[in-house]
Length: 163
Image (tube, rainbow, N blue to C red; front, side):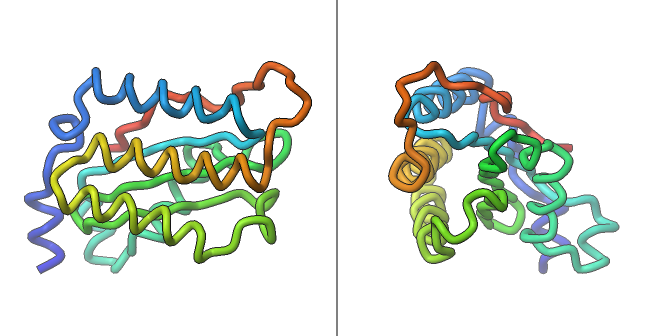
């Protein structure tokens, strides 16, 4: 069954056209004015068949994407990846070690559940925008921008379509 989902996965480019990606990037940039974290959104239609047959799960792929996109490479180790794997209908949030102990797993899971609900309703852009807002709210609460300085943008705000 999983093999077929990956063979016939919806197109990330069709679900997230350029104008949608621009609106998501703007939401990320706006969110980052209120906290010190760095948010990255990446979407992937499906995994390569070799990865599916090896049993690669969405969490493992999200961790790979976290490294590949260098989300870990921020000065304060406070990058957050929101990763969507369309074929598995799975959303993963990977947060860097600088946020360990500040935001508990259940809070990240709530943000994932929000995105998943909106995706099931057929609203991919609104799902991601709600997820960015939820992650941004967590970061604003637990890693707020307090000095009034201009945010340092260490990661690109434009979402990444992988593969």
